[in-house]
Length: 310
Ligand SMILES: NC(=O)c1ccc[n+]([C@@H]2O[C@H](COP(=O)([O-])OP(=O)(O)OC[C@H]3O[C@@H](n4cnc5c(N)ncnc54)[C@H](O)[C@@H]3O)[C@@H](O)[C@H]2O)c1
Image (cartoon, rainbow, N blue to C red; front, side):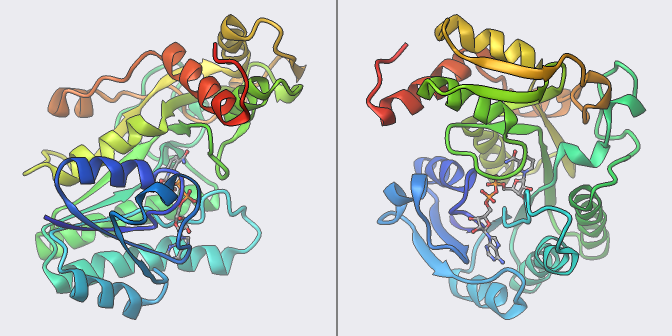
């Protein structure tokens, strides 16, 4: 099936595209950035169109050319900060709407978009309990509010036009080459893997980690499924404090130099207790243990640096 991946040359995109190719899909990627890093190995297997998701004509042209059966939008102002509201609004809100509208006009069978666990806001709103897809949304950052609006707009398109538009709310995605969004957990693992000293603000700060290959697997399953039962799915992940993550890293690198400014942070953490039973029950998805994924990231970095593996 022809599949259009918008924003596919970044962190999650190349891992998703690999899975789509392995499933026999014909993949076209549209991005403003023609791709470096993990995307490089895919450039001869995937058609890449330079296009800007904030320009409706670029998205519509890509849809008319590719005639995709499936479309996923990953382009977003992740980690773009709260400092440029106009530009980030265009990318996050207008860009997403352009994808929904072009998909409607082009008769695309399935649209998938990335929401985020950020929509739920702070864990303190819920106490120490798992948050489901049906819980109230308390996110207040520009990023969270844009994701909340994307979810609203997706529901509107589904209601008004009967489209199949499914959102996934990824947790804190981790992997060796993550550059944007939450990166403290990445710095902690990759810095230690390189033998660098890592100093972070709060030992008790909680994260809900999911490896980039695992979230790519979730997106692929939802994108290719015949008839997902829900419009929105939590990815879930493994809840861990940065202090606990440091201890995990030290199991492989006992001399790792990881220090923290202070102990606390748990009470100020974003949502880290998430119920993903919807996804697990419907798609049978289980993630490898975090310990194995941490080791993998350490070794990805050490391989690249020519250091002995552990
Ligand atoms: N990485 C995470 O931890 C995480 C967590 C929750 C949700 N998400 C969501 O998942 C999605 C993908 O995340 P990612 O980590 O791969 O992000 P990324 O920033 O690595 O990739 C985004 C891609 O979009 C492209 N892009 C940016 N502006 C564009 C434009 N105007 N037109 C076309 N392409 C454009 C970029 O070049 C990049 O290739 C985003 O929606 C993000 O909010 C990510």
